[in-house]
Image (cartoon, rainbow, N blue to C red; front, top):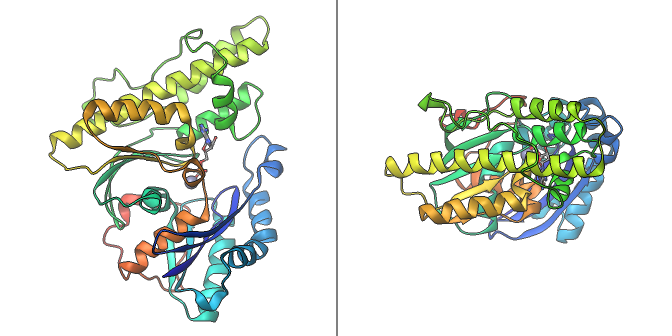
Length: 347
Ligand code: KG4
Ligand code: ZN
């Protein structure tokens, strides 16, 4: 089975051809970083226009690189939400047009399901598994029971972790996206210099054991920087390292709680998996590997280029839907909000 995947929900325009045998025949991606960097973050209007300008070319390139034409396809998968609605509209309209013209199954993919299932594109893995989904828009611990069934164990009460990376980078005068800039600098800085909070870690409310909060951490960074007499390169490096250390402590602690919860509930997890853009962070991958090892659970981190937004993961999630006969109708309305846990029972 061959499926074309289209991703336009944020600041990456991407098209990919993926087979049900886990082969990525092509995965073309154009980042809008340059356009958005002028504004220090993603501007939805600018994004939608940029998707529109390049999508057709990118789809042609994806087909060309895979050495096929549209007739060889078995389905069209597209991110139908959640995300910036202008961009999602661009992608879904194109996908519907191709599906209608070629009479192909149309697969409306939840972007978060794309991240959640990426690992099964990277390697064979059975359900259930625990997922730490950490991206620019989401921070969640999710029990993945099937391609259509997700149980949310915890989410963020305020900012997403990728958003915190991006905002802190902006405070430190680093370019967007903040994650890679901070990760690069953090290796050169002193993680112990600034005493930053670890929100929720010592909270008494047991129902918040798998929840996240990053807005206080971001504010603490701003305050520490404001107190400095001047802001030098070593301050920038040390703050990047201190911030990343705080984020790692939070993510490791919350992950451990979620893993222990699953163990207590006798859920036989096949793995603990990370995905989403922040999952590309090497220091985080190493820290999660260590905690998984302590708890005796296999840890899997898909290749970094599959963790950040890309259309191969959308094509793969489409293949999983197609295999379950969960095809969507052409009047599917794009969804700016679409929680993973609401997918169950939709079909
Ligand atoms: O999954 P993604 O590509 O897009 C969304 O669906 O949001 O995630 C983008 C986020 C951005 O906030 C970016 O700063 C962050 O992922 N990110 C990283 C790294 N690479 C990307 N955060 C930390 N370390 C990285 N190496
Ligand atoms: Zn994403």
